[in-house]
Length: 454
Image (tube, rainbow, N blue to C red; front, top):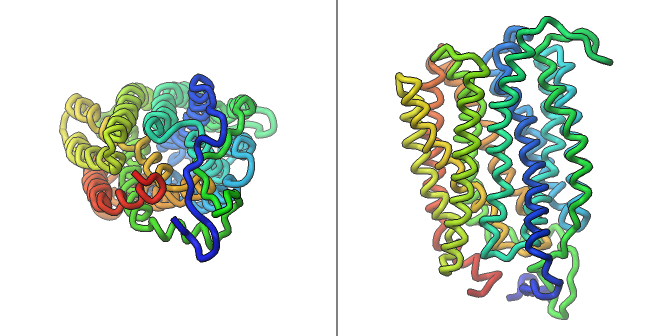
């Protein structure tokens, strides 16, 4: 199929490079999943420090929501675009190494924050580093696996979300509880600091070792490349990149919005659920962290893996819109169970309903990652990942933590009403998620055939 007026054609050329061993391909997925896990531990730790940060720095719920969302998402969102473009023609492995080291350093520097704005800047730095991971990781994995196995592979990578969030709640929750009961501590360079600040140091510094581990990943050959009529492969210009996106804009826009609202569900729960149990049910941070951590870890991983398997099964049955069907199911389920969980007067019923909630919110994550990778050529998989993440973070990472804080301060006017604020957030986000996954079924089938001809 001609894509420009000159000589460029779309060609599926997966056979032009030797197939990597499936064992090594899964090793790469595991290493990248470890990086993703680390990233979520580093971004999630703030949610477990809401009370001591507010007491020490005098920050409102709305500002806490900004620290959890906008401060991180601002550069994480916008830097993804140039990083994705750069990754489509340079070593994706090396970009990840630099990113892991930088975001770990900035997480540790959060310990030195003395005001809302200094903590805001440090969180922005975390976002800058983490912006390198997803575009590069999705592109690498897509070059290691065929499309019929890509949903499962990207789902395993995406487990890092729930492993990281689960560990952040279980391990970091216990650490937070332990260090919060300590008097002020003295550390090199920073001097005497409030004990809660030590949590940022303890979760940030191990990232240096993870950055070294990434060096064991080999850069894969790029597959499913867009080729000229003479068979030559070249880097796409900005005009050609926008042209390729323009050919598929309906799928890109709808899937990005769908995943944005899905991530709003996830981030709202990950950030505010610990505070909900502390404020509403009088739990300690360690109690809330442990219970939520176990649910997130188990049900999040089960949900994302089940979604990947279901997507791949439908792909093998030639259901081209398979990733979108998985997302629709997840959105409906999350809206119903999540809102009911937050409105339940009993902690026991809330916990019981959070089990299916985290299953449904995690169900479409990996298959959604695969959805755009499947319909775009390899030269722009990093770039389209960045475009996709732009939509996710613009809605999800920014609004997910912010909406409950705004509802607390301006709608219900009480921090004790955080459960109602979460219920409204989950109902709106879950239903919007399902709508935008269902909307592009027909056009997605056309975009699928543009590359694969099936």
